[in-house]
Length: 640
Image 1 (spheres, rainbow, N blue to C red):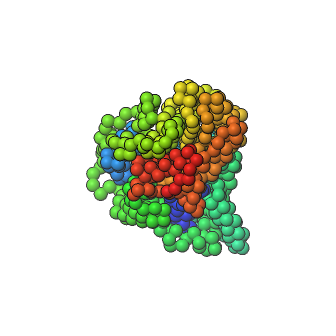
Image 2: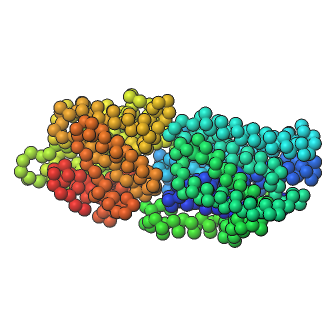
Image 3: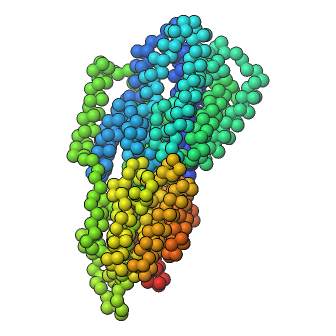
């Protein structure tokens, strides 16, 4: 096949979309760059197979797989030692078991199915990031590289005649693509997108549509016998501009959990990608192909595999907490390091092996030994990994909390109980892990404010447990199912002046309503939550003088995305509706904590982070926030 510069540019464009999406750079649909990769892979691999069969009358499968191995495996094997170093020196103990499984699944090119069987949503990558979260797409491509050449070779042998065989391949490609579309439609379950987003069968449509284009006769890359287009090039340019405009709109606005994506959005963007491939191949001198052939895009396309492979681990390591950088500067550092590493890998490692093979040793020995060594690295670095178990929730006193949600301070503040006149204000804090962390800080700070705080929140839980089916952010049941199981018992025991309900993470959960899994901004989710929370608030009303529901704060750090901000707004509307239905009060923390433009939140206080992990109030940085909340409960003005 002749080289087509515009296809390099498409690769570059695709990886730029992914880079910006993973950087939370307000490109909501940048993940669709992966689908552009899929379309290109299906087109190019099938074109290579068909061109070889046309030239030689057969397909040398062994040589094909050797070429693919030279292209893909060296860079992947070079990444694994870096992942092992991350596991050894940076990963938390609770991450090791998951990281070990991720690394082994990556080496086996089954990372997508590991995530599916673990009910782990792709969209959780920003919440609890694994440095190998992105390898699901590499797994799908490798599975295609193993199976599809066998299928093409078999079809061509059965058909026997060249043109007829290619037509059969095109027909099978289209039939399988339609089957993939049908599978996504049938298996889609509202907010629970892990199965359809990560499954090989449901995501195969993009690759198969690329294969169909390669065998359709419309775009035979590098085929000297392909008919000239003449004036049709102008029509192709118009098509290309329309496809670019459509993809730009989709990449800018189409959220990855939007139902529209799974009801036609994917296939529409994949067809637009096909249009750009067609234009790049058949109108190489046109305007669109010229744009795609610009040097920066082509250079990015040349190293796109290394860029994709290395960028996410670099993003996970270079966080705001580790670098002290925010937003723009952090993004520049991440991008610069990614490009440097990818360029060096391409120049001195990937390209030499791809062109010349191994310069030392026999591949039949070196390749298995390299995989075995990579496995040893991973097992050694994750030694001592155990399955994560939810810690027990203590309830003995005002300062007890779940260790998994916050770090235990060795000493309470020096402030002692003051001699303020009158009895202390008795506050009961209930809710989830955000309530645990904030309640703990309030308990310490309340000692100097004549406030008695009793913390009874529970981590990794839902108030909907035992009422409607509910899943945690990771797509599986909560570790400590019921947040509200002891609310009535607690208020009867304590008769608090104020019961403060702090549920800061429920908007990550999915709820089954109407036979489908719903997310926070969907009606079934809202209705179920309002019904349950208002009932709980009404139930405890006779035993608590005041009931106050605290609205969720916008997240920060790795959690900060436009989508999550929207989810917080939806969740807070739900909390307001539930409070109104039960005649309870509402406390909004955001005017104090996140009053900046675009929901910019207070990051540090007393030279310490307010929420070290982006969600939970912890350490000395959270003291002022706790005092502000206490001031609101006492009816006084709080300040930073």
